[in-house]
Image (cartoon, rainbow, N blue to C red):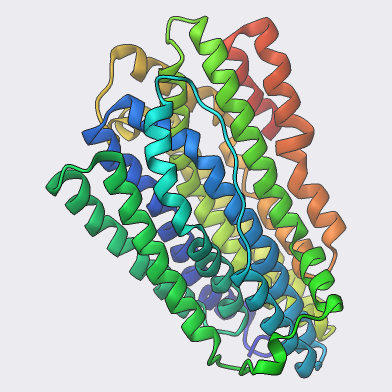
Length: 412
């Protein structure tokens, strides 16, 4: 079907479940942020922002193996090499089952909350890897709705348990963390259960034996999305330190900027979930047809994905510019300075949201067609080549405002 059905139909079949899966993934952080904001307050919101790079590091590994494995699998299937495709799938599952990593930094007032949250969520990282990376492999096997279901079950469970643990049992940060890892465990178990009995291929014991050529192929094709996640993690750590330092020298103090930036980053992730879900829906279509030599279908799929991404980006831009106070109010009350900083951060840091669809779709597209070097370069442009140096440079002259202006300049 990937090489025969109309591209429009394929894109909707793959992109819609992929978008829903990404939105559901964002819910893990958004729901925690909501309940913690209502019960713990500003310091709790700041703590989840400090802990965020840990989850990002796990996602980087999941994308390295998951997207790398799915791209290699579809390219091999499109070229008619089914035996190698099954071995790639089996090797990717083994690599996902054996991965995990961590690090971060925080201001003293927030650290106890961050420690309380992360010492529990760390237990869920192996299952986060399995559910995220496994979801990409399931999508490559032609079952994007199963990926969506795995994520949806975990997210719904997380939401219910957040309400029970944080409000019902008054467990605060620990309750939110427990709800998160239980949801991740269920999602990971469902993903692995499906992968053992796939739609187009069945993984057998011999397919689980690691072969170096499969590992290098998976790693090279997964490098672009992995690099982007690692870059996000590095930028987030530097951003937290910069917000803490320059915030302490401003009227806002060190906690308000970190709390607001953490919430706004996760709100922006909702928009990016649409864009990244769209790019993930594009991946199996582009990979299979490129492997089969049907380049006209590859171009058609890319252009349609870019067009949809542009519409989504304009809608997000209008929301961020005209309704920032309403959005930030969802995550609990704060002082007038809290709202003042949040509104300004929305207006300035996210000003060029309307162009932010282009980079993730294009970098993932080049990965999908087996050109990881181009994909990796494009993935690193915003975060490492532009945003990181600007976060360090602009505040020297503009104070905390410099951090805000670094965002739109890097985007542009």
